[in-house]
Amino acid sequence: MNFFVLSLIKTALVAAVLLTTLAYLQWIERKVLAHIQLRPGPYRVGPHGLLQPLADVIKLVTKEGVIPANVNLLFYLLAPILAVALALTSVAVIPFGPQVEIFGIKTNMELAGLDVSILFVLAVSSLGVYGIAIGGWASNSKYSLMGGLRSSAQMVSYELPMALAIAAPLLLANSLSFREIVDTQAGYWFGVIPKWNIFAGPFPQVLSFIIFLVAAFAETNRIPFDLPEAEAELVAGFHTEYSSMGFASFFMAEYANILTVCCVATLLFLGGWQPLWPSAAGSDFVAPVLFGSAGLMLLFHAVQAVRARKWDRFSFPVIGVIFLGLAAIFLIPVLKPVLVPLFWFVAKVGILVFVFIWVRGTLPRFRYDQLMRFAWTSLFPLAVVNLLVTGLIVALAS
Amino acid sequence: MDAILFLIFAAIAVGCAINVVLQTHPISSALSLVGVMVALAVLYLLLGGPFIAAVQVIVYAGAIMVLFTFTIMLLNTGAESPQRRQALRTAIALPLIFSLAGLVSYLAARQADSTSVVSFGDFTGGDPHTFGYALFTTYLLPFEVTSILILIAIVGAVVLAKKEI
Image (cartoon, rainbow over all chains, first blue to last red; front, top):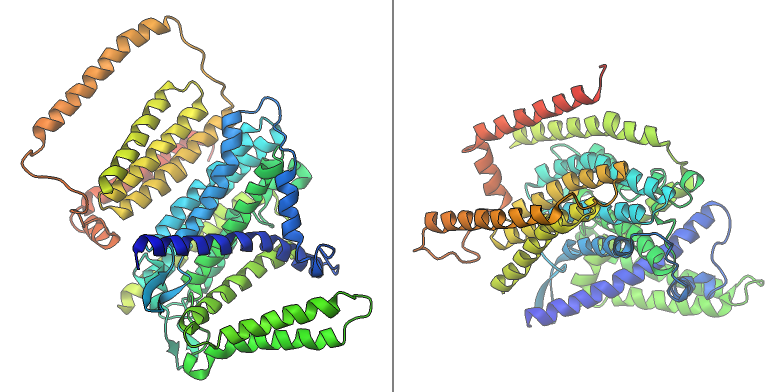
């Protein structure tokens, strides 16, 4: 098929799925946080609050966008656009699965295959700091400026340990392309333990995985490192003066960044789309079993619905049948080579995203000087030592 | 296709570079410089150097220019006011700039080998493997000397910034 048509279809598909996921990530985050704190979370809009993202989007779009007096108008408007555009760009080089052949068309499950895709992600994410810094500066408010300055300092500082942590698995894979890095992680030790980089010899990358995750929390401005928007001291940090779509753009950029770092962590350390155990031992059937049992459980609870929640009698069977349908789709032989790797990739990314939300519900915020000292005196030397040891072992092993 | 992309990004690079000088506000100038860096990175990519393109964005646009904007924001400098006899300064400077640009392009045109035709996609030695190999074999000495130079600069910066160590 024509390259342009194929690219267009893939782009449309990825963009639609990505933007829907971003909207629903916020729903998931509110739900998970709520359940950590023993409350139901969003519940009123649609069954179990499932239409809440839609309501939020309508609210944010129709809200009046207030532009404060004495802002630098060009940069004030440019900042959220820059933030969200750069955050969405890095998804272009992330592969979601292996090269597949479906209905006779051979294609890679990614938008653009680069030889240096990991460097592309690093480059785009290092530009992402401009959106926040400019937004904070152009707002002409001391809280915004403080938030913008803090975020620039924080992101520049944590980029170093992050890059060093990324370099260690690159030494093992001997490549800068995500696709090749994942390919080197195929296979199993003793037929059971997957050869992912956090388990793989000659030197398991557990330490660099932890360093990467910690730096990722700081890069995406999440609790416990959300100093740029510390509400107790800075109102809302760099986006204090933003309302309506400007605010929504910064929010979207944050979630897109979380998704990107989770995808990168999955590709570099958790073996990308490689299943947890060999498909000869039945790992292809994990997805249908999971979805099928979830569907059956929903149908069971629909019969025995809690009396106070009348709508469950209607919403549970519908969602249960949808889950059973998903389970059935995984069993179609034509779609299997596409869907099974995609399932493993999405499952790993989803677990990491859950960890991000879990940490937000658990940990308090650092103090600013603690944050900077931690980056430079603990995390950075640790990452350097890890890289040197990995390099030494790789050199000795080869 | 490559030629069209080259023209677009070359125009962006030149436009941003002119904008760096024309803007009166330091932040605008700094961000225009970021535009120059990114456009240059795309030109490297077109010439077959994906590694150098990525490094260009990471190091120059992502690290050095962030520090520039950081400093400008921290000092909170306002827009520059025009200096005394601005028109006279411009009138003297403009011909000098154009003559310098003309001189450089004349020398470049005379030095360049006019018989060989340069086209996009000819150069293939820009991948990370070739690049790293050249850096650690052929150019090992300049590479190490540069590292020591940077180390000296870091030590000097620490000494200057911290009165008592």
